[in-house]
Length: 162
Image 1 (cartoon, helix red, strand yellow):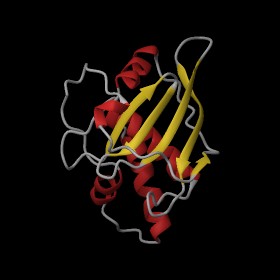
Image 2: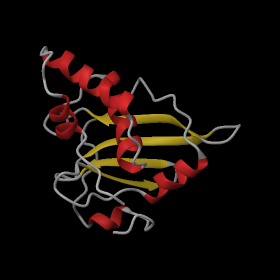
Image 3: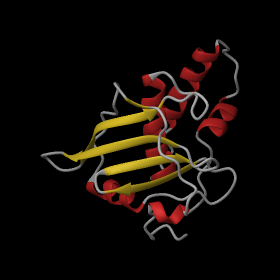
Image 4: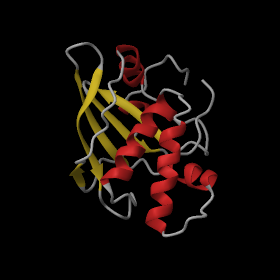
């Protein structure tokens, strides 16, 4: 699917599944996304190969983030316009069914949400967020030497060139 073609729910046929155990995310990203970035979110993102872990599409002001292999919904993010321009996350829900998503910490989920939007949808390097993901994963696992590449690949995956 070309990068400028809009991804919709129907792009995934019957593969997508709604969040089974939705919980409000208490810690939301504070970034103000530009109008151009919001337009890119509206186009969505469709995984192109097995190394990509996320599919993203928007309906109105809500952006849906699903795992590409299972189709499980993980985040539903409602955006709101900002008075001075741009868009912010107004609210978000996250999957808490441990069989579908292992996240259980709002700080980790806030970082993961930002990473999918920044690194996967927008194609940004997002090095600071990647480092934070690795730090939080190592802390949760109680292991300081989990390879950063392994953490990033298993949770975030790669982004194919557009």
